[in-house]
Amino acid sequence: MRFNNFLIVIYFIYLTLAHILQAQNSYQGYVNAHNAIRAHVGVGPITWNYTVAAYAQNYADQRKGDCDLDHSMGPYGENLGEGYGNLNGVDAVKMWVSEKPNYDYASNACVGDECSHYTQVVWRKSTQLGYGRMKCQNGWWFVICSYYPQRILKANVLIEA
Image (cartoon, rainbow, N blue to C red; front, side):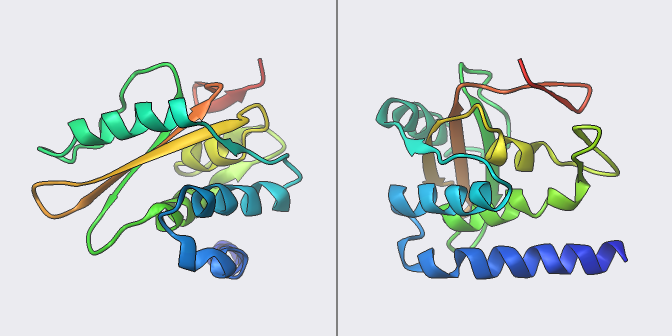
């Protein structure tokens, strides 16, 4: 049953994002990918912020040598991703949103496995984002999405401060 729900979620993500695949690395395509998922769960839209994007790109540039998924510990919320081939912004959003089955709305917590990337995408108090992307020396792509304002997780429970 859980696997069937997972497949349904993945299928929905594919259908929702199919119309923006041509703009996979444009900032508007990235915003659209977020907003499609946010609208599906009744959360308002998010907008692009050039300052946040500059921060994200600067951090992505720093990861060129190692491509490590180490968080920047900066002033923004963030999701990180890495992949080979041509990992782009829309692919990264799909990867993060695939954690949706692990989020329990009733308890506002992750259950069974990771869901913090998904909760960052749909957190209603995040209103602005920016992302950065860098091809690392090992040939993989590093992607970061930074969110303003930053959300707070404590023991895998989202704090609605």
